[in-house]
Length: 545
Ligand code: M24
Image 1 (cartoon, rainbow, N blue to C red):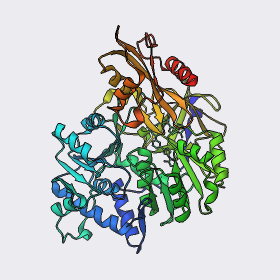
Image 2 (cartoon, helix red, strand yellow; image 1 turned 30 degrees about the vertical axis):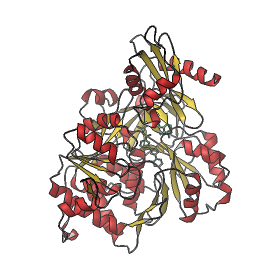
Image 3 (spheres, rainbow, N blue to C red; image 1 turned 135 degrees about the vertical axis):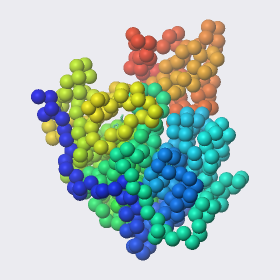
Image 4 (cartoon, rainbow, N blue to C red; image 1 turned 90 degrees about the horizontal axis):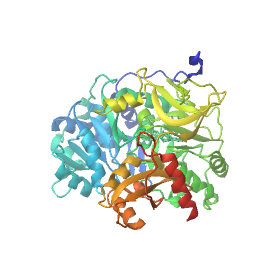
């Protein structure tokens, strides 16, 4: 029977709590707010602190403002900001009410923002001083955007609200927060977030994450084997962008645990190490690019990390060698790995701290199931046999926003989600990711969809065909590279093509892997770009440079 090869995660350590994600967050923050001086967030760059008490009060008032403004469970707001102390205020307030939050990359260009907003049509955008200009430009083109609120500015400017002015405009100054209660609704159907992912193919799609999906993440975060022991005030350092599911759902989970979260918006090696030491950090999150940096860093020995219990890495492949070097250099018992997709809310494979194997992405988390499928015949495979990974469980997204076709291409009728990754598991149920079947490029853990860059290249009047793929890079994991076919008689230089792309797409999508001019793009029988073949051509070119 095939079914004996389906791997199930263990029972959850605590039963899944009742209520929506907003109600659970409200209850948790209310408890921690009672602890005098309990710090929720510290800005690693400025050292400014925010207390749980502050977050609780402001989110209740902001939620009341959003209600009075006219938003409800049918509304969508957007957040477009780098990591900062205010990022989660609109996010948490929206969770209380059941307003959907769509989170867009703060580095996105106008073109990219237009594409993502059009999927969800948010009416209010919460942006930062840094993203304001771009958001303003986008607003002039999108009629459904009614209001902009600048979260890290009190009173706003150019006639646009800051966070305080928005609240004082829509919430009475004598509003009694004791009277505030979050809304109750069906947590299985209410969409808490729309995140963005290219899935296994194509352009960005809106990934609908329900309140129930999020409740499961909250539970796993508290599981002592797969998550963290709940000791309020435990210091945690994170540099993972909040706009991405990895940063968003780990940090929201930490807030439900009462941790002190030290945040960074930009990675700086010295500052990161200084923060680990000065705040006696017990746990930190990294992406493999930064793990590689620390494997070679000459600064580590200058600091005291005696409080550090774990480093966790995720978002892209981490080699066994790098993992072991970093573990030894920080004198840790283990390096934890997490593996997830935007479509699985958060990590669905995590290294349990009871059984750590270097190079493994860990075991299936509680209440979820995984299987490895032979890509040639669809059979479920046993241990040590590589195939495509599939997942099932309550963290699997509700579907792609307004895109039934794409949803049924990735989730089958029995609820199994195709990961597009090739992996195997060993006799003990530890998973190892070995390759990516889908065309997705991972640049420093960020998603880059080749189809999006190809579409931009084809807009150039002298380019008649284009193919993009990721080529291996020691520092970034993968970097995008392109092959283009020019119109007869036309000539372009590599720099012109690279600049054409850089002018329209955000830095993670720039053609750092170079451009090659070909007579024809290698394609398969159905006309799709043969990325394996293309990769060989482009990788060869890079190794010659
Ligand atoms: P998205 N090893 C190899 N490939 C990986 C990987 C890994 N560990 N993790 C992700 N990928 C690749 O941008 C696969 O090809 C994420 O990356 C994502 C989303 C939510 C949570 O999504 C895969 O198909 C997380 C990652 C996450 N990672 O770690 C943790 N969360 C975590 C770690 C420790 O769509 C593609 O990236 C503790 C707790 C955690 F939550 C998916 O790319």
